[in-house]
Image 1 (cartoon, rainbow, N blue to C red):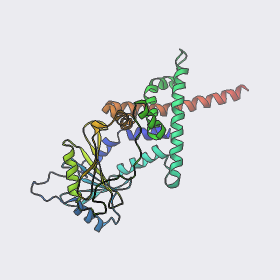
Image 2: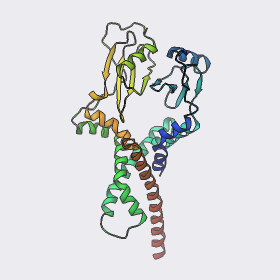
Image 3: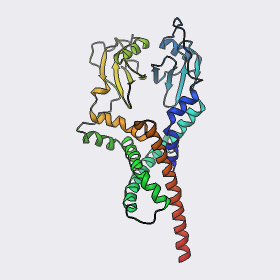
Length: 327
């Protein structure tokens, strides 16, 4: 019930946030002569006024009306007007409410040291739910007296199998690795630090953030958003994630901070089938892979789960008291 209800709320998360924030966080068309602050100048202004710690991420949008997003961790971010340097805010109440909903969807609302426990319970319940759907299909198949529970379960089952199965692949490394092996590809190794064999080791980074982002923009002509993952280590390379046209089309660019030399360039087109399918699982899980129609189906399927919970409890309640009265 928790997973289904929070899933329904998150299906149209992007559209809801865009609608609520379209006036507050949309920048009027700036004059062509208006000065645009550099990224370092914006960071310095924010550091002086409010934030004392270094950010963990910076996101640029190709839309000139969109603000720059500077983030600290998973849920703390500031939206900044790049032409005035004014902080527009840290997101609407709806955005923060949906972030809490996502916490319940992923970790049953548990935080801190309890977060792994909540995630483990949620993953185990997802596996059990997939088993219930498949066995339910077998039980419902013969002609019999159909009830709301059976009808809703039968017609929701194909979509719930997809949602549950993709949830398992996203949750368990062994399931994700199996996806790679099924496509004949080797699972990727987890890298916490990228090594560079250049001769400039030990040199201080002297390439500005503006120059690094400019280099990243040159890599893909039709980019939508570019996010820099900021490492706490000053000598670490700059890791960019570039969103392109298409569902789940992300490319990765890693640059040397000393001279902006490309250490690694992995465009979406060059990624193996296992990698592409692994990234696609998220959008299949949320229904975004099918556009608005896919999201509506995911919404209705999650609503079907809530009805299954209600009708299942009602059937169990009646069965319990019927058996008690009969005895």
